[in-house]
Length: 431
Image (cartoon, rainbow, N blue to C red; front, side, top):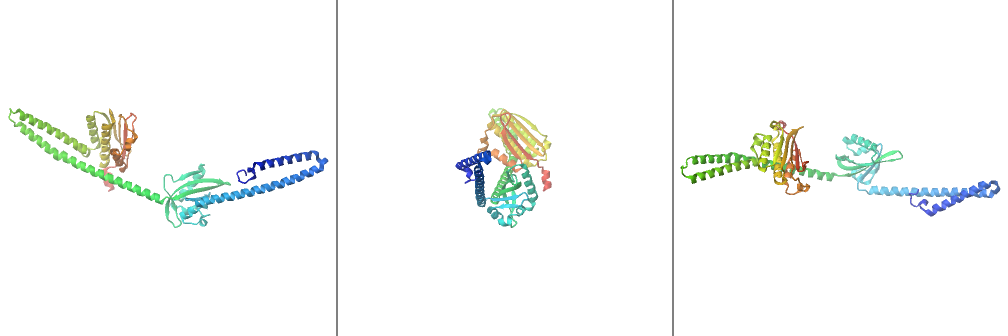
């Protein structure tokens, strides 16, 4: 009763007065009993005082009960007003899944009046395909000892309107006991608009990813075409020029030293041009990636990087036959990731050693590139101009793989990429 406002037990003066009266009454009764028949008037006074005290106690108890009832009614009214004014739907069910509370927001959400919902089974608002699983989840939740939790942490929950239409919801559940009975309260809201926005955003991201992948494919095709032309047409022309220059050099007058020096200079320039042409063609797209496969192309790339930069490289690579049937899009993505990694190491890392691992394990192609350079700061990956890393990550994601960049145990940077192995043979069969 001390928790109820307007109770006499809240008033210190009333408590003190009651204690004094009870103490006095106790003294009177003790004295009356001690003197017994010698003082009949005192016995009568004690009896009258006891009757008055009992009556007063009954009156006080009656008042306190009435105050408590009024407080309970007022509290229930406030709680009902809060529930009715809540923006989210609130539904309470008992252990048998019968609805015992259905607020106004729930009426609007499900298109059902509270009078029709109360006493009915909660199943009427759950799509049929989810009902069995729902019962299992509720029973399990009731035995966990937890008082509340979010529902559907990893999946979208669905509810059923009176008209039969389904809609996605976000919900949380709590349970409490009253008089030995369990009650479960669900607070839920309609997330149709949010889910539509999320789905639209997801579709937009997928479309952008597909567009980006198509742009990269077109870029690779153009690089391949230019590399072929440089290697075949321009290479043939330069070779012809070298042959003509050699023919001319053999027919120079024996005593013309100036002409011989000039032709030798032209020959050296032609050799330099041939080398530059081959290098440019290889940077655009190494023809050995198409002709010999990923293993040989990756090995050549690492060796060329080591020769140019002076960085010591250690390579662990599966046999070339292991990559023979891997889809061309996968091999190109891995090759470009390796190429971008080595380029970043040469430009920024200041490394002395690089370790490269290229393997296939459990149906996935793994690439790992690690260096012992100065590493990187987390904000470097968020820079607007770090398009190479962002492009690699998007390409891997589009192909169903992943790419991680982190600090290496040796102090530098470690790049890990993995892609599901798809073979050209499988794709042809699927087509």
